[in-house]
Image 1: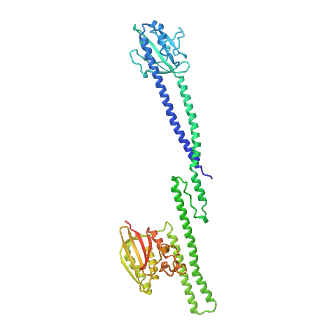
Image 2 (image 1 turned 120 degrees about the vertical axis):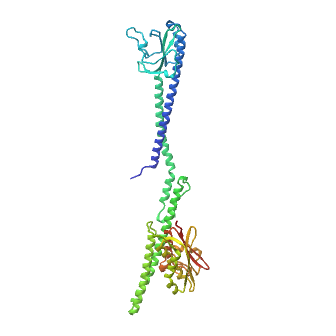
Length: 486
């Protein structure tokens, strides 16, 4: 099943974000325009009502209202939306202007419009200042929205006339409706355009990912050295490309190690098998004595032991590389353990005419069995390549951040180019595997299996420590470094 397009998903998200922004901005603009229009209309109505009341207060009587109607209606001239009605002291309409839709309904009996025909409005007293709070809202007979002010005016003779100044809001609502429609249309078009442009831009921005995928597709078993090009990768993807290239490098190195390991394992296992087969063929070539057959069986048994040690070492290394390898950590005195290990090897050292000396003391936290195995491998290696009469020194020391355990023996120095590789599996510097004559190096107590030093390094990596070799004219020293705990 094909996965969802990242470009499409981002384009939809971008479109949704744009739509949200447009809705918020459009709503703000609409409300702002509505408030601005309402404020301007309120001001026009209030000013017109104030002016009309002042003009009415200058008139003498109800008849003067009718005589000076043009003077009063001039207040709303020039604005077709504004209308005015003036009622005499008897409540009858004396003046009307631009009242299409009939603000006041004429009385059915008399045919004249009166104050009683007006909608229920709050009347502003003649002595009260007219403000925007006095504006009322209602609907005319033809359904048009109306806003206006109904106020009294005191004539010079003491009578009270009434004035209604109103504004038909139909044009305003029509204007707002059109503005809203335009905002909606612009918003929809903007969202569609934003999604389209966003999709195209995102596809262009994701091109480096497609290039990375194309580069990664070139990596095969026969081309593990291929790396992802980083020339045109954006800065946000540089860490990803670096991590992928590092992973490819580790895969290449692991594959190379596996290939070398397989070849070396086949080579080393073929040697004892060939020895056993050759000895058996020689023995069967003609009748042999019982002693000769016993010698053959003993030789084959030694080769079987060698194969068993090799298989055991390979299995240990395989388990040590597993992330769930169990270690039994405990604190102990490294100096005391070195003494115990030296005592165990004392007989072998006497046979080789080699002396063992232990010095120093240090508290270390480690797996005791693994510690003993690592030191034993180094000590067996040192005994094998120490000249007769030489002395091997096992030393323990500690500093503020680490505990150091070293095994030093005299002998021919190891060339610098081999010091790091000697911890690789099956790597040995001997006449059968290199041009270097016997250089004072083997792989420890596993005999010729070539895995002793590899096991030492695996043990140190399990403890989060390290191992390295130092070699000069005085001899060779292997140093185990354990990190201090607590």
